[in-house]
Amino acid sequence: MASSSDSDSQSKETILSRHRTAAEEVVSDHTQLYIGGEWQDAASGETFDTLDPTTGEVLASVPRGRAEDVDRAIEAAWDTYEREWSETTTSERQAVLLEIADRVEAHSEELAKLETLDNGKTLMEARIDMNTTAEQFRYFAGVVESDRGQTEDGDGYHGKVIHEPYGVVGQIIPWNFPLAMASWKLAPALAAGNCSVIKPAEQTPLSLLRLMELVDDVVPDGVVNVVTGYGEEAGAPLSKHEGVRKIAFTGSTVVGKQIMRNAADNVTDVTLELGGKSPIVVHEDADPQAAVETIAFAIFANTGECCEAGSRLFVHEDVADDVLEGLIGAAEGMTVGDPLDEATDLGPKVSHEQVERTTNYLESAREGGAEFLAGGEPPEDEALEDGCFVAPTLVEGLDHEHEAVQEEIFGPVLEVFRWEDYDEMMTLANDVDYGLAGGVITNDIEKADRTAHDIEAGYIWVNTWHEMSPGLPYGGYKQSGIGRELSVDTLDHYTQTKSIKYGLH
Image (cartoon, rainbow, N blue to C red):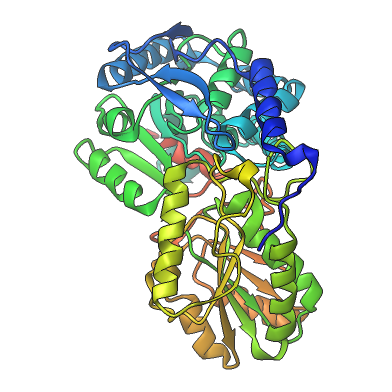
């Protein structure tokens, strides 16, 4: 069982007091829709609460946006695009992106604390996310300078290729990395010259709303519009809207498929970053201690709420006992608790709904004959009873066809498989519908290269995990998505290609 500190820093009263004080410091009064540069209520006047998953208390009430609000946001975006944003120069857009990055950096601690309150990730992880957010705006401010056009001269003609923005794009953001994922989409969209209507996840709207408050004087009115609400009430109308020329979504594969269906009637272009069930392959030459550190980070970072989390471990029989002994110790030694406490390793999941989803898979694994090497039960700490906590869990003995292995749990749950025959192991490693990421742990460069090529996934780590560098495209194979993010390639997803041919007479 993972540990939870019995010190005063983790008592129920201390946690409640700490979170209430933090909320008073960082939760803004501006928690309305942000449309055309103005803070507005939903047309219906309805609101819903966003909760602190650590304490269960209400952080703020935000508007329950619906189709009418999406309509207003898209109208505002098109008005701004046609009136001014489409005429901006690259250097003008660069200046906006760089100033956004500056504001994020200047308020990074405040934004990190706000995201920890709203999402449940540890403060350390939230700080990393703020660095990532600023980094994305800086990166796309730089790469937008690259000339991605081309010319072609032939007998009696001159041709050129140019890239033009779509105009207005729709973007739907998940709850696991609220502001970082918003930057993954906003930065390239704005760099390419588009205006955006963006819907944050209903569980975690606060950090994006606070960002818009911070950059209100930087971003021209109507360039970025934020509509809060539920997926079926605000996200669906956005993805179906004829005024949206491009839709970008990060989230589950099930919802991603629905987004594609919604976009089909208008033949709207889509970029989808969807689910994952990523394999970690440990070879016989791996150093067990180093492997344990990489594996634990791969599955337990952000409480396992990562699309690319390494959730299926294929460990060679020669080192399996040592690696698993180390992983059990790592899981049981993790401090589960208040994410605002610097000593915490694992914070809560984002909601009770997500806790129920994870525990349902664990119960199914028990029924399937799994052996729980660690975890499998809620943390035994009364101070955490009102929160959304799941202990880090290791499971062995499941058939690879079991639903807990085949489907994305999106929690701190690792399924373990031992192997001796490489080809048989690789067949299982690729025997899922997903192909977002994968990893290899070995000291042999030939094994690393072979395994990286053999794994059917879009992003492969060798002896590390979760580290993403701007410039290396990120995205999935199979049902893990369409398109790439984090690189200059992303600009192509936010522009339309036009060819012009001149006859020379």
